Image 1 (tube, rainbow, N blue to C red):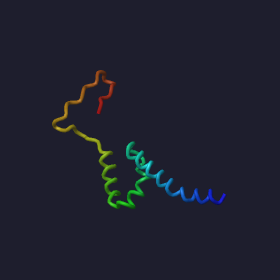
Image 2: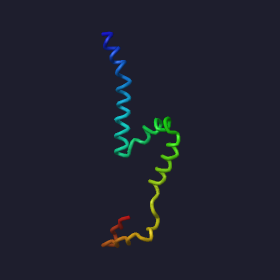
Image 3: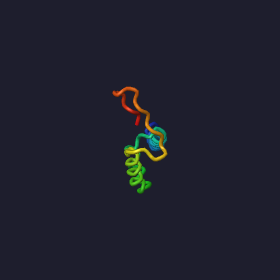
Image 4: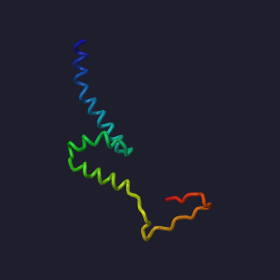
Amino acid sequence: MDSLGVVASLLSLPLSLAGFAWYAVRARRSGGGQSLMSPFQEIWDPIAHRTSIEIRAEAERTPQTPSPGDPPLPLPRHPDEPTDQ
């Protein structure tokens, strides 16, 4: 019974690190999980905090006017139908 406790304690650290690595890969692929992994990222890369703020701000921005080369927006078929923006 003592050997089971030793094995469990020896495997707990590698398994938890493997779990964090799996979650990090999954979060990067899906684009989510920023709030869980950001403290660990800030520990290893303190500049990442400022970078993540800039990325979030850029994602929240929406263009107010189209660029000069953009094609015109299609007109709605019916007056009640919203345009795709």
